[in-house]
Length: 124
Image 1 (cartoon, one colour):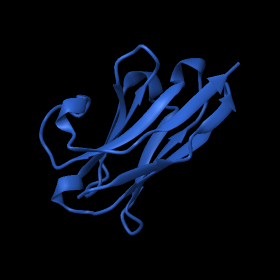
Image 2 (spheres, helix red, strand yellow; image 1 turned 45 degrees about the vertical axis):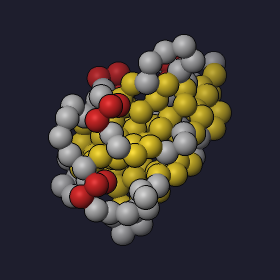
Image 3 (spheres, helix red, strand yellow; image 1 turned 90 degrees about the vertical axis):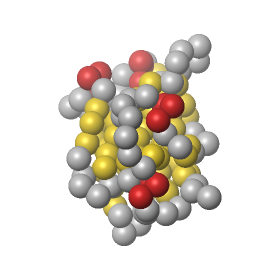
Image 4 (cartoon, one colour; image 1 turned 180 degrees about the vertical axis):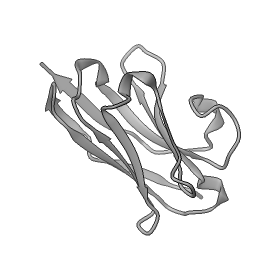
């Protein structure tokens, strides 16, 4: 069974930085794509970024472009999300998820495996 474990969440002031990590239990065709999602209270889960672990190709939602960077270290089976210039609206539970391929990258239903989430709170 594929397992994903997030870490690195916390509380930070607006303008600050955090780096999230997602440890993936295996590097196989089932986990080719790893994405980060977030969910604020009362809101739907939304895609933040996505990376192809084989090619390194990345995708981002518009609101985080230039501030967030997704990367991977395949030797460590870990995917990172570096978040800079954090804003209040970045607050939420952040989840990493994995899929083998196919489907719109930003749609949660296309991902087969999910972590338990880590909380990010940005304050003024």
